[in-house]
Amino acid sequence: MLINSEEDIIQLVYRDEWMMNILREVSTLQLPDWWVCAGFVRSKIWDTLHGFTERTPLADVDVVYFDPSNIDEQIEKQLENTLNQMNPHVPWSVKNQARMHVINNNPPYSSSTDAISKFPETVTALGLKIDQHDKLVLTAPCGIEDVLEMIVRPSPFYLEYEDRIAIYEKRLEQKRFQERWPKVRQ
Image (cartoon, rainbow, N blue to C red; front, side):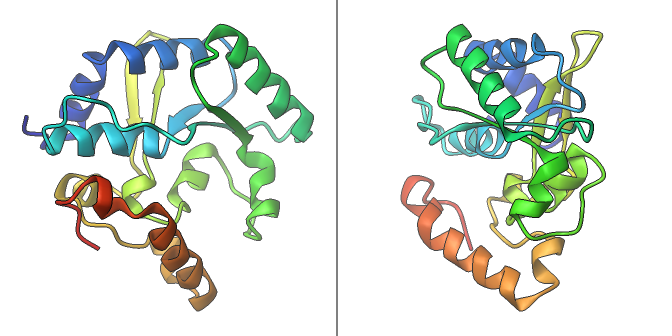
């Protein structure tokens, strides 16, 4: 299947019952500024572009939200527990991006999309959610070109400082994208 646009990505996900169920489950939490992001989106695109019939297993399903009014990490754990009760077969990871700048040693984020723009790779800086009109929405603050062309490169934020590039390079070693998706270039 060809994927050429954000609308193509949205249609691809609309047709994936598993992904839509996950998005609907997260939407029931009614979190502020929430997204299911990173590998959840990237892997679907790359699996499709590689013609895979089986989904690549995910280490986790990343749920992010932005709530500066309550940055207690325990809330995130409670949200993960709630999601685990809804769907125990998903490796949930929930993070409030209003506190993650401290963990990542970055300046404060202004929103979840701002935080996503600061993920290490452009191909991972993607998120999906269902809006209040039950419409699927994609955020791609670093664009979709790299993920569609299967080119892994650091996000602009990671290009700013050498210490971030070292983190990016270590992640590439750990992720080993080309072992699963041989058409991917670094």
